[in-house]
Image (cartoon, rainbow, N blue to C red; front, side):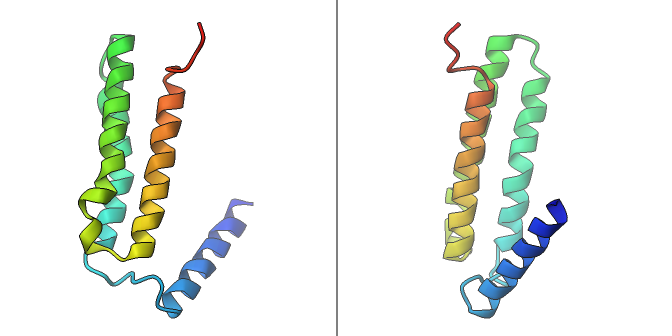
Length: 107
């Protein structure tokens, strides 16, 4: 099942690149992808080392917020479609992180 979505995603990226809507050769595109992938993992690793639960929760939210701001920091060096995709993914990751910290629990 996953491989089918992978193939569909690659076909979509190839089509966008052929039509000139996605400039994967733009300077900074691969760096932005690497930074956007590494930042959430680093945030999770750093917050996992903190023993106190409330401090760990706050640290996770702050670091997820910092990871969300990464696409905006390098916005001038990438094409618009890559920027839009990275912003959407970053915001969704931030919301998933905030939700996973039980910040909105009624208890």
